[in-house]
Length: 125
Image (cartoon, rainbow, N blue to C red; front, side):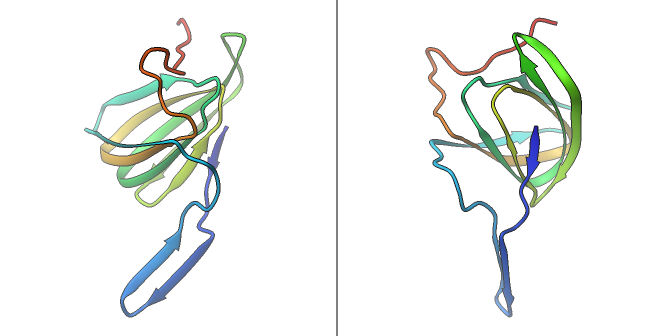
């Protein structure tokens, strides 16, 4: 459900470092998100869109669970991500973000959000 992305290369010298974060995909939309501690975001899924996240600062708990036929299936996947972490959320995965401390992250989508008919779906609780 949540796929943590390890660095594919790291280079360090006296000037600093370069870390390879993502070297695949055809991304169509990039967003910068800022949230205060204690906030919750997401709690939705996408039927067609893959999302890539890169945490710039802060700490975020991500809770994910597969969705099929409008219902949760399988086990929940819960992880905490910190500054520098990158991860993917696949389609049909409900994902909720619990912001544990003020955080900033980059959200990259495989499909642009169509404001008239967005690929954002919520389960009836």
